[in-house]
Length: 389
Image (cartoon, rainbow, N blue to C red; front, side, top):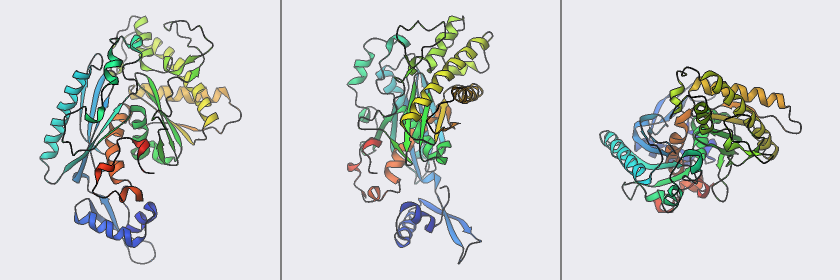
């Protein structure tokens, strides 16, 4: 809410004004919130407005990606105060652990120099089935088996008292949009992330829904029509998975087929010589697949919006967004309520920011069940799917 009065907070948290007054006064005395002025122009006395104290609480978000580990340190309001990226050819567990521990050491030093500031938790965003699809990405065959035996809640070296929360990377991206980004405008939306592989996150009733297995909105396997790109191996079946059409690795392979070698999408800004034509071919093919997927999604789930984001350079992302909107309109689907198709706000930062939001959501969300946990953090589970609602 950015800033609010005690009455505003009482309505939002479904608590009595008296209860909220006690809570806010306690938070102010502890330095968690501060007064920022008064609101005039309403009946009665002016209302005192409060904001979170940004520098009082920090959270760390780490995204374990297939090509890089990305980490952010966010303050109490969700603003990024520090970031680090460690790239690799493939996510070797030992390499990822070393990179993550380096990040945690650096962030601890930053926060340790800030007086009363504290890191309240670590959030980890990671793709499920991290080592699978090794053929598409030229990963070692045993990589999936190595990740299967790893418990991410104990993977990195940190204080045992620090709670660790783990979620799917696309789910974490949806949480970032819900709490801090474009998704704040909607109570019900599907977040689509165009990353190395495409992924999704479902928000309903203002909450991220992960499903009984934590795998809700796994859009990669969704069937769509076969790709028309000549760089994609001919598909024997009638349908092809969305993963094999709307993923960044498909773009990288298509550019490679035209003699343009890139390892990271940031190398597309500025566009290399000769990249325009194959890029636009992929954009059209990807947009077509996404438009088909959006029809399927909205035929099953009644949502207000599709929030589309990607790790692409922003000019290319906005081009993709416009093409998806145009192709969706051309398909003229009947029998669904058309969702707004809007652009996400965070790009490649979405998953690490969402990961950093996991501890803040679990520890400070205005749910009465969370408030009643009190000081006993051992009752906190590490996933959104098992948090009180």
